[in-house]
Image 1 (cartoon, rainbow, N blue to C red):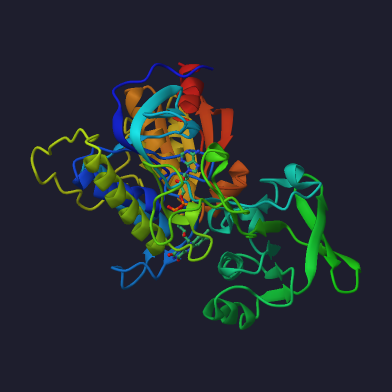
Image 2: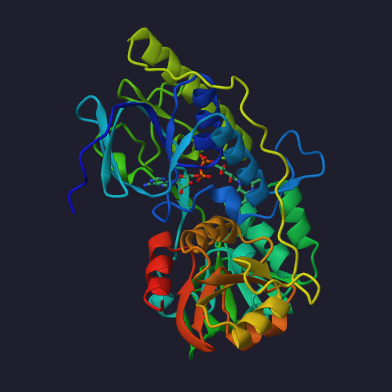
Length: 456
Ligand SMILES: Cc1cc2nc3c(=O)[nH]c(=O)nc-3n(C[C@H](O)[C@H](O)[C@H](O)COP(=O)(O)OP(=O)(O)OC[C@H]3O[C@@H](n4cnc5c(N)ncnc54)[C@H](O)[C@@H]3O)c2cc1C
């Protein structure tokens, strides 16, 4: 589909909404550049980036007791928005750096911009097993932190493949649920930090399988076993597991600018050493997309800051910036987020757009004649953080003609089991006690809206 005609030329478009993208946005917004962030949606991870897929972040300065990854990203985003960042909640589909102003297509429209910061990070790799597609979301997952709490993974044997920090973190995390965790490592040592590796090796619930590669997997409707090949003696074995979690590294998201900017052999953007400038003037790189070495939240945020300052300097030098002034100068404070209380007899409201817990679910399921969105989440699920505000917006737009209930599958395991939930987020759409549609993972707002409207 051809993209719509461009609006006014932007000063700066930032592609990506991880720590690099949002930090760049904070700096650019405070410099009155009114930046646009194209947050991403599915193409290279989720809005908020990789930290949305982790639990505790213990090394980001300013949080002495640690902070959950999704919460950290919610805060950085809120800071960027508070200062006037505008968000396009979609993937950038095309980036054309061959002409000025640069042109970016997203959400079916073309955005023209004087400067660009690429902060598209990196995406989780897959193994490409012959039966991978068949068992994807039916035993295979790329996010232990999102899916670990689902009933199918409780009290059974699970496997994690990988030998770095992510694999170790996921293996330790899954011991909360599994009867045993098998860590499948390609070589004869862990690449993780010493502290992480020690935690794994000291954990009696984790069995490390050295020098093993997974050649395929098998099962019925759900994963039952993986096939392991010993790379030292060539032997094969079948390991019965009900879950396989991938933690085998990331690939930089540079597909959209391949051939337009210099990249290294692995696809990372090449910048001027120690600086954010790419091989094209006015185009900057920040975070993991240009960093094969450090790959941390704080280094990504730091390079986002550098990229925004460099872009501002360049725009000013070339007299290209059209700045906006803030009125009032200090924007309203964000404040603490209000959490939805779990509904009970005392606070249940049959007309409330969004409620929480099995009490509300039972009441609305039995008594309401409106379409009902039931959203299954888990406390550490980053994609759930992304999805919930989108669903709330849809319900708002529908002005009370449909209602939503959130079920935390960790707190309400039985409900999740009865509903056959295999991962989070899962959304089920009911009307008059009948399941009309089920959605797994993060989907566009328009999909939910269309499904509900079809029932009205
Ligand atoms: C499991 C795990 C645990 C981690 N734990 C820690 C930790 O404890 N501490 C720490 O400091 N670091 C940690 N890291 C590393 C940290 O998450 C990354 O270094 C950091 O997120 C990189 O930030 P980024 O902004 O460069 O990219 P990312 O976080 O990867 O974000 C990239 C963004 O670009 C977007 N995007 C991609 N393609 C497009 C497109 N076509 N259009 C628009 N947007 C697009 C994505 O949606 C995403 O929003 C962890 C990483 C993982 C995977």
